[in-house]
Image (cartoon, rainbow, N blue to C red; front, top):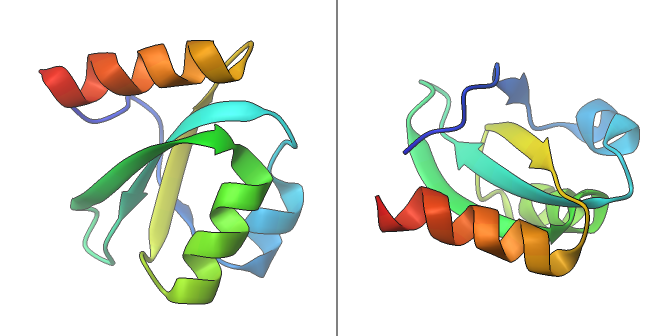
Amino acid sequence: MSLAKPWRDLDRSTVGSAPDRYALYELGDADGGTVGFGAGVLRDELKEALAYGDAAKVRWEIADSLDHAERLLAEHTDG
């Protein structure tokens, strides 16, 4: 199930402005199709995704902790 958030281009500007907090994130291709989900410290995760060229777009939901982010991930990937 996709996040109900607008897509952002996955570029240096987005990574630089991303909160340095735990989050659930969704990676997308150039057409807005989901290519994967993840959980962790958002800025660090997006730096890695950008470096590896894993996706063209991203959207996220901030979490209170890593445990919370992982629960959100489970909810979005089990359905």
